[in-house]
Amino acid sequence: MTRPILFASDLHLSDGDPKTVEAFLAFLHGPARHATALYLLGDLFEYWAGDDDDDALTQEIAGELKQLADHGVAIYLMHGNRDFLLGKDYAHRAGATLLPDPTVIDAYGRPLLLSHGDQLCTDDAPYQQFRQMVRQPAWQAAFLARPLAERKAEIARIRAASEAAKQVKTSEIMDVNSYAVGRLLASYPGAHLVHGHTHRPAHHQHEVQHALRQRWVLPDWYAGVGGYLEAGENGLTYRGINQEAAWG
Ligand code: LP5
Ligand code: MN
Image (cartoon, rainbow, N blue to C red; front, side, top):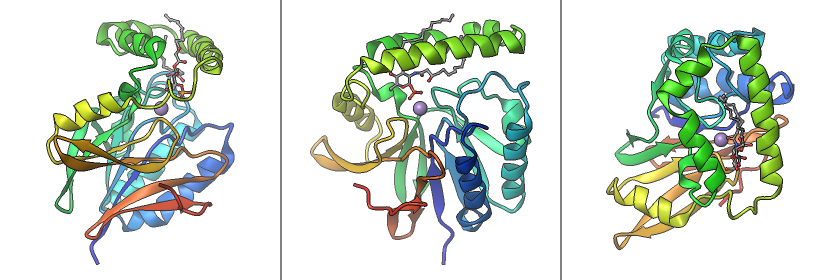
């Protein structure tokens, strides 16, 4: 039997959600050990203030990922909207490779386009404006040059502002825009899309250039409940973690 390729995202690991940390560790010790590769497509952590913020949790996760890498599982990390400051130093400690967003891979003959997914939420204008600002390398360098405690305080303010802003946004605004999905798929002929971010696990089909293309949306993990996507020779399958995998 060939070893599968696994995809997960939006684990939002933090000390505040120990059940999800436990579920993720069980996943790393269980299904992930039989995989050939593990792709973590953003927001592995609740937030990331810089690679110098090495608390017990981030150290433990780096150690566990490194063990898995040493066991022969290729580990890939993509940035999410909460942990885009995660750098090469941490990736190295975790035995992982950082991937640009988007990235195309070949999964047993099937081209898969991998993305976190936040860029596809084009109706969320205030978020896209915020994103454009914080993704500038010069802006990030200036932020990372500030003392860690200041960075954490700034992030706490941004998180509070983001939570308040989300209260007055409709759920449609916070979902992907189907034209944006169509445009992205059109620029990667033949590929199917796997992304997270929206916390709306489902399997969608889009007609692009007169052909049907698949879009798999990964679930978020919360209170020990989550899931992942498995790609093997026979196609893609959802697997629930502490829940039935009856999505899409
Ligand atoms: O993550 P989620 O799903 O809850 O919400 C996102 C969007 N929000 C964010 C913010 C992050 O959640 C929290 C920040 C993480 C740490 C970043 C690292 C440090 C960066 C350095 C900063 C100084 O991504 C949310 C979307 C939602 O997804 C759905 O798609 O709607 O977007 C917002 O709510 C953004 C607001 O609409 C506008 C921006 C508010 C913040 C303004 C603060 C300005 C301070 C500038 C600092 C110089
Ligand atoms: Mn996200």
